[in-house]
Length: 413
Image (cartoon, rainbow, N blue to C red; front, top):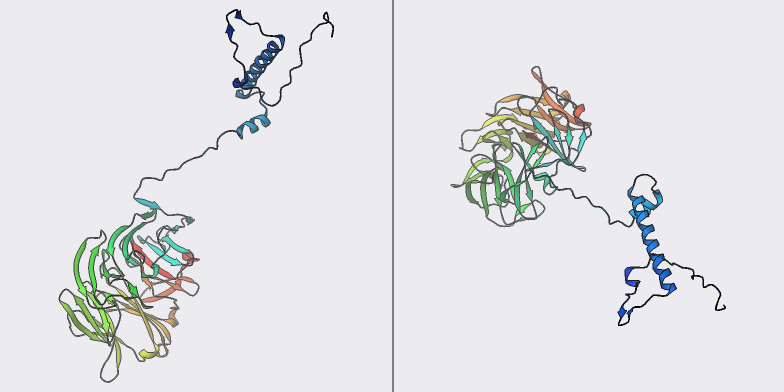
């Protein structure tokens, strides 16, 4: 290049993003005044200014909804931090049921009952509002489900791990927070719907669930966990509970245990509870066996019905909150199979239902509130056992089809 030839500006090559502020050099002044920069530096500074002005223009375009490039917006969105949403639990004393499995279909038995049907099986817990037919899956623990005791407004469940019992209030809308009732290796109904017996025996051992210690601490508690009575019990297993005390059995004899100690009630074995008395299978000196109602005061027993061959028969029972009892006998060839015997709270007969009249059940029936009858698992689903005129009958309950019915409890709201 000659001395008189023009000196064109060098081309500007930009690689990557615009240079950061750290790449700019500070211009300092000396004693002779500011030094004039060369043409190259003037061109670089001009290029940087042009890039900055172009970036501002692009930023304005991104902020406007019109003329924006979807691809550019999508690329920019990936540079943003991830957005998270936090849902806080509701502050309430009632835990809503996890899932509503069916829509309400109206009263299951034609008229309102004022209660719910709580069942447990392979699919877990399920609660049916018998007044609407709605089904929910309540958040109840699965441990010791088959030891559950139904009480007014809920259920008492035992935790085998912590050896404690808790009351879970149930409504059609959900499950209340559990109320701790105290330590318990066994929970027994107390003959009243608002309290239970808790037996603390140092843990359970053996396949039959016997108590580890030879002596247990017994507490009668209400549903708030308040202890109403306390005494010691010298036994490894409790058979039944009465308002007066607890029932234990040894060597073919039945005893009642309370604060005063142990006293005998009958020779035989316990089948169920009838009001404030026991239903006992007993045999006399001539080997004649019968079902008897025995009170705790040792009064003369009332004969309910004869049992021709107890060695081939099986028995189960269920007691309503008002003391009514149903006895289920099965496997007795003399009776043709399965028979239901219904008793009033004082032990008087309310009639019976043989298998030939429709009683073909897979479990003991549970009493519904009031005069609505009973409900039980049957061969094709749930069965509704109720009076039809002067007789008892058992029919399918279509609104209860599909329930897992290993365990059936009725909850009186």
